[in-house]
Length: 431
Image (cartoon, rainbow, N blue to C red; front, side, top):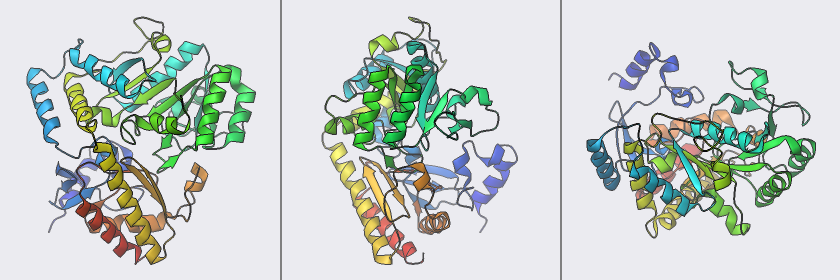
């Protein structure tokens, strides 16, 4: 039988760089042929060959309800009949922003945009404009979109700034980006001692999802908040991945449980809040957000910002996940998956560690959970590739890269989890 995935991939590579429109989809890290999705429903998608897979990437997070949830489909269909795009304000934009502010009280005002990258770069510009400073801190292993100033790897020391990680990014563009090690309090304190008066913000994924799942420790997060407040820098939470995914109130609500009164100054959101449509946002305190045009001097604009179809999708999604018991059930299902994988790996004698929060999970072929990017990089890549393809052959689709978190949806059933654990057990036995 002809492999339609391979046929489509060969065709795509003639007209699309690498055959894909986002690099991780090309399977370069794991080898083999990408699966071209034909349709999806609930916890599953079907590829070009009509092979069904249990889906644990969920469009990299947005599909928290699963694919094709009836209430969301109905809302989108109704919105489409009213119009695709206006380039003018709508009441639905206000409703979505009001819903976000209710879930995350750290935000008093919110600006809607179309992508996480756009939200991240806009939040950085806002922080610089609001503080009058240019330097900022980010952490190795945290990803904030592909804006030039954010595509940076660590420099040779604290006195030096980052180096570009992409061709086309001039060194002078990242000369004010300071890249530190995640969860390293001593380094954090030294950085603020050296550069505190020049720092506009500290930007962080509170629970990183792009070096697989690595959470910032509570003491580390506490120190981030203290040092930002002490030196007049803004604490920017990138919750594109964690927003309304690890908890209804996002990661900031998780940290507030251990740090009463804890709040970021600016929050960057995406993925779940759009329900699968291109929609993202950034928000913060009124005094900061009023620096944005047309009220203030910081310019930001977007033709499709607040798109009426995307806001309908996002609102319907938020309504469903806000129902009593949704997150309790989602968290329990995700924990069941993680516990099952741990037990299967232990039985096979495979070094394995895993963590989860809400509907987000991550695992490593390491005996202990890593706390930073350097430790993540010591994971066994060839063994992961065997695990990935072993699961794929058994109808389980996880991220085609060692360094990406996974996602469970409200549509995953106990049987889906059991089938996944069984598939993993079979593969672990061969590693």
